Image (cartoon, rainbow over all chains, first blue to last red; front, side, top):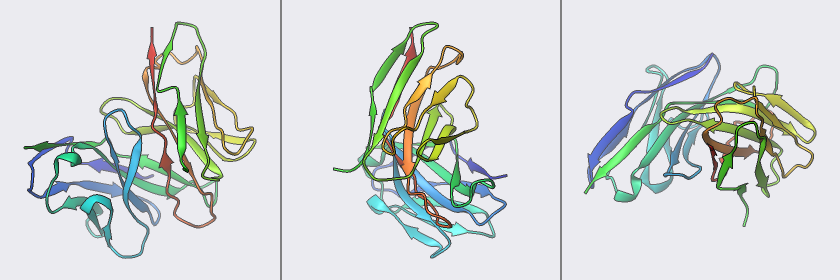
Length: 118
Length: 115
């Protein structure tokens, strides 16, 4: 069975300082991993995804994440926070649904709320 | 302008009433999904559909029903059997491709409130 743990429910950083949002996962298969961002009362937007190619994945808005199999981690980083980065961030793991070849089930973390201090 | 639309943005339900949430996509995706989001929790899968006229229960299907009569539409009905329906409901879609790692794209959501 797959699972995702987002280690911090809330992170606060000052504008212009680095952002680190932590995510650990467990999976029985070769997983795909995603980070999504959600602004208040909005749907989820894909930031980046890992699908067994390069372990360092670059996404939109200056975010990137590194897949570390030995640590079962997929932490999200950004060198310099911007006020517009304030949102909820979800780490997601995708495993194949055993009875449905080619389709995949997403398991979501509980989210990390990022606050940017002016 | 391609994407996923959900309507209404806010929906109010009276006790004992069934309500239907709309989800439409013009991305030509085969697979569609319904999720429920509660405060402080991740998304939980209600139902999904890989192809027209076929759908499967997710992790929390009780009290919900769906239909998939058209490729672009996947409406969700919240029935009176769902005792705690207040939540934010998100619809998603993805290309159904064998052996590939699918990305799901999300609509803007519908917030359901009980009167």
